Length: 366
Image (cartoon, rainbow, N blue to C red; front, side, top):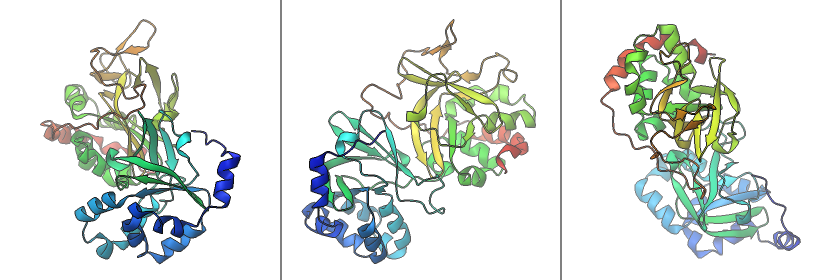
């Protein structure tokens, strides 16, 4: 997203704006936030000095819900609470008019390595859905801007109706999303810590159903081939959020080989695997859930680039939805699709057995 230049009138308003403390204390629906932030004097001082930021301020109802679920958080985990608050500060002045139906991934002040491993700071995903601005955070939690463009001398405040969720590690997020197959595979070869700690990853994570459909094929592969299959789902380097994906784009995977992005009919494909849930933010990048396990043609008896419930290649090589019932991850309204809610798969034990062959996954250990 390209941030728009503020108008002369807006600049004049900013020039005469109050400091952050004055703005927060004069806004009744932020009284609980004022009380919470006051317990972190260093944070108050830091926020008072920053310029060109946008604060996503949870209203009283949002904080009541958060504190009800985490009654001892402030006393027992003050550093974590402070980190959560920094995740609510965007590193740019972003007026409501800058949002569109296209997701914008905006870096925040959450940068501690213990909590995030995304270069430039962990992001939030913001866009218009209908007439509302929605902010998507970890575990695809959705917050809505209920009042925007409150000026202060360091930028803007948007009041939101839900506390943001700090993105969690890949393994934790996958389990919470019902993606047990990929976690079982990582656990079996001792790669959970590795995949959780590497910086700036884009992971194409197959659903449990996708793993089940190719278990017979995978079981015939040698350990080194299976290691390549896993690495073929991981892209290192700048994080490839959905807004960065382009039709015909190629991405280099951890194995050194490329996958191709195709955008057709509102659907996004990685080779022939369809993205069914995009932009699941994790502590070190992003996960896009796909409906098929990616395999290279030489490893796949069928000769295609993916197996399972993929789109059908056309004569020109452009995938189309084979069923006509798949949910488009990028509908015209820009609304995010529902998180994958796959139940704990009965194939977990089978994946564990197959994943034992991933022992040669040296591509991740660098």
